Length: 386
Image (cartoon, rainbow, N blue to C red; front, side, top):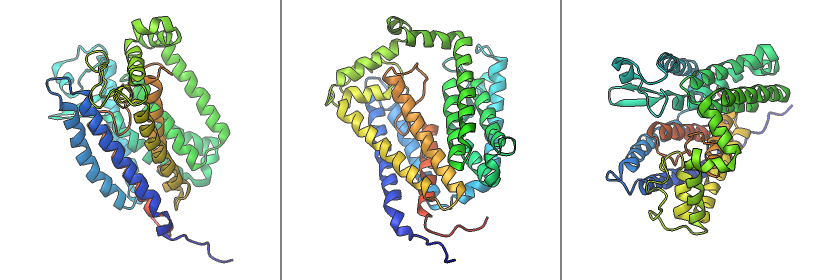
């Protein structure tokens, strides 16, 4: 038999270049709109400054990740994942012991209570939301584990449950903070990695049923979440219990086709809270209109198209699963953010990838994009043995 044909790397070069260009466009567009979203305040450049610093750090790490051999992440998948789980465990313990914020000063200094939950670890001037780091370390670990299992991945006990276990552990620890929306995002991302790696469709349906049941239980058994669900299901209650959703829709409608102009939006003037993060798409819709939202949508579509093309043509199972999972992470987060802003689902607090304010979040997304580029650059070359 003749040796399999190996395509020349130059045939794939346009995909990785386009992915890099789209990533840059999203980051620049995000910095501009975080500047506009905070322009009415005294410290009007605070969000843009935070986003710009994240873009500088993340841009350097993007280049490093793009040029490093992505197999390096397979070697460090376990220690990175275990460190993430350790951080999430510490936060979960603090959240369960002091759920109302009345913690000793020493605990509050390390695990701050903000906006009704404990999601951060603070060490000196550095404050990190560990669940944001899990967006990267979880898919890397699941991809490495799936590649190690190989054909056994299609077995229920010997493969499927072993891959599902770390996803479930991370999701439960994040729910304890509490942060149900992030737990859903992480769970779907982990399952997406396993799906690309080759789990059975029947097992995927089983995960979907169990996950849907778990989310329903969380929504119905928690008073705050059940109120949000009731408000979403009852339009007459939305403007009293979910005022931000109504203000978001007003902003989108006010923008029309061409928008009111960059920096000229009015919903951010005290009407729409978290317009620089949770509802930034509404600010973009008001100031840039339908044209701006369409441009942003096309950028995300291009990013995901290139990412999934790279996953489909990756040179090994680990690269395919990792590229598919990281791309799915961006796609799912963008969809959920848009769904909340457009009143298609209850408010979740998920930010828009590359756009919303969040230094750690932006760095993680840029590292993920760099890894996908690295996987794309090495297609058409024989894989080296580990």
